[in-house]
Image (cartoon, rainbow, N blue to C red; front, side, top):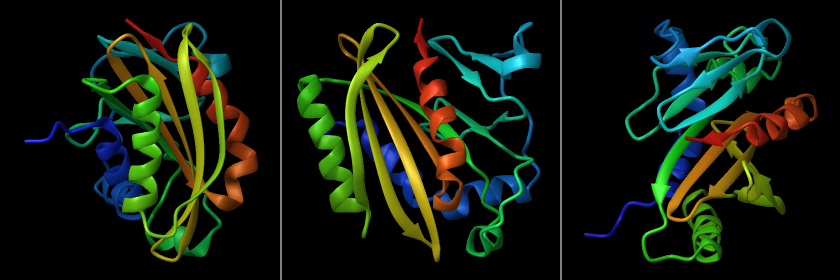
Length: 197
């Protein structure tokens, strides 16, 4: 049996952009999950989400939701007002998710290439619009910006892949294209706040 790689989860999450958040919000599952910690910085910058194996900043006004199986955390801007009519129909809200995986037999470079190939092959019409290398928590990171259309809505997704010695973390930030410029810097800042424990 093939090892399940993190990108499979990311791809499933991307495919579920339209329905996933809408279903969660329509059911009213807006509770913060276990491990959420709100520090003194919460009033200024939002809260810091603290989990056993990682922590990350949550933008002000965003809240953690119960994540689907295989997802370590999901944080949603539940009070966001979406003006895109196609996104409104599916009750979409901007969100980010965190997933974990192991490198197994792959090198960091092979893993990133696998992720890009999996996105291109499994998400019809996806466009990889920008890629860049960087550092997050003093570890190698790779940023991939993509664009796709789901259920008649145009989405922009930033995936930040952080590679440790054997651990891989990916943070997927999802919004409608019309809000990309509004959120772009916030997405990158939030990704760079990620720390492994």
